[in-house]
Every structure is written in C-alpha cells, then in structure tokens.
Image 1: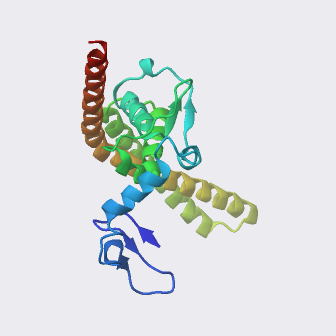
Image 2: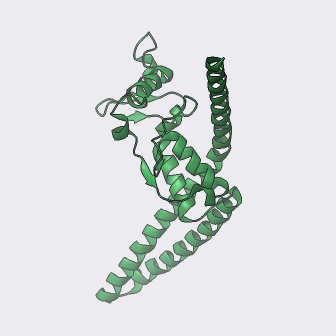
Image 3: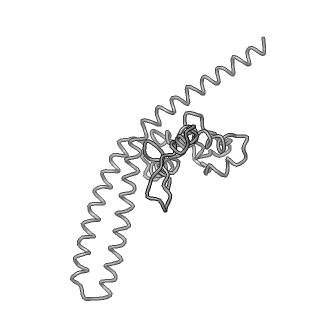
Amino acid sequence: VVNLNGKHWTLKHPQSKRTFRFYKLTRDNRYDEEHLMERINSNFLFPMQSSVKDVIPCKEYQGNHRKLKGIKAMYIRYCFELGILKPKGIPQKYPSPALRKDLIYMDKITNENTLIGKHNLETIEDVLAFKLDLNNQIENWMNQRRSIYNKIKRTRDPELKQQLEQDKNTLTSKIAHGKKEIRICEDIEKRVPDIEEKLKMVNALETERMQTQKEYERSLNL
C-alpha cells in the first residue's frame, strides 16, 4: 500500500505490520520524494517519449474557452497546462517543471474540474453557496431516511417493506454522493489560491521564454 498524502511518502507491504518511508529505503536518497518525482517525470512527461500519450489521460475539449469565466476558465487552463485536457486542434501540452508535481493529484483535480463544469460554478462564492445548499439537501435526505427506518420497523406488509427498503437505499446513495461532492468543494477551496499562484508562475516563465526567443532571433538577423 502506497500513501502519498502525508509529509513523507510511505509504503506498507500487505503482509507486514510496519510502514516504511520511501526516503529511508536506501542511504543515497534515491527514494526520496524529489528523486522519485524526477524519475517519474523523466519516464513519462517528455515529448520525445512516445509512451506519454498512454500515461496522461487527455480528453478532447470541444468547447470555446473564451466563453468560460472565473474558476471555470482557470481550471480548464490548469488542466490544459497539466496535460489532462487537450483542446481540439492544439498539440498536447507537456507540464512545465513548476506543475509536474501536481500530476500526483490528477484524479482529484479532474474531479474538481468536472464538478465545477457540471454545476456551472464560476467563483469561490458559487462553490460555498453550492456546498451550503448541498448540506441542507443532505440533512433533508437524512431526515427522510430516518422516517423510512421507522416505517420499516412498524410495517408488516412485505411489499411495502421492500419498497421502503428501496427508497432507503436510494436516499443512502444520494447522501453518499452529496458528501463526496462536499469533500470536492472543500478541495476546490484549498486548491484555487495555489492554482492562481502557479499559473502566474507559468505565465512569467512563458513570457521570459518568448523574450529570450525574440532576442535570439534578433541576434541572428544582425
């Protein structure tokens, strides 16, 4: 079992009671987080390696990004920079060094982007309002389920009991899905400031790269 969520990445064999930190597996630091990420990036993220398209699950983005606003636009740009989304007709993007470590959160980032698009959330205020409304819905569903529990205990009709069990299971699924979306909302709240800073960094690096390219081309024409 591999755990990447803590300060240090850990590994636990299914038949072992002990948990090991990766960086302690050898004394030469070959398995610390930095060196592991370097090897992952070297193996999977460089254009000259044909295996990239099989490792990064890119989806064709059919929409017009100019119509997007707020965090919707920001997440689409972020997913594009990470190589998760591929705008139609544009070559696949390979992550800059500033973003490569975020690929270990690819599944979470994809879920966040999907939720934002599904519910048309453009600002953090929209996310907070959606979460509040969802909390109220969950509370309502839990009250309904509690009422159904009581009816199941009282009824002696097998058919009615079966229908009530189905209704209870439907509400349980809704509650579980709602709680999952609330956790995603909380992840969005934490991630948005980080994305803003990293995209600023990417923009600055791209501006610097273009300026260097222009100066190089100018020197060739002298």
